[in-house]
Length: 168
Image (tube, rainbow, N blue to C red):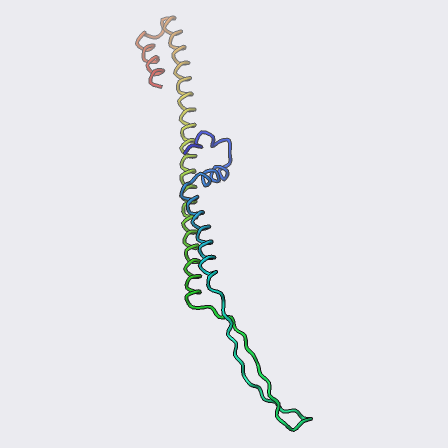
């Protein structure tokens, strides 16, 4: 990941958001979801809902008049075809699948970012340990040089301490 050097300058969530924004898979999935939305709208736009109107006669008696009175009751019902419902369900399921893929990809990116972050922390710790080791070896070499000049250690011991600096 390109952000491994700047991990300490940002929060983990900010880094994840930047990673999400640069993920080709996530961008492609988001574009597919938007395209799917437009396809659904266009597929469902051609078929307008139909009205089902039923008329049923209703007979009633009027107390003032001895004759029968007739009227009609109208029932209105909006109908959609089974193909309309199937098309809508198809696109809804497609969006659901794309959202799941997007969430999975985000989790994978989050894992990769966390791995890179942890690796950078480990590298920083390694650098600190190696600096400490070099500093300690240099200090030991200075002490060994002084002891050698005083005649208290052999030249072999001074060379051994010098090799520790080189291996550190």
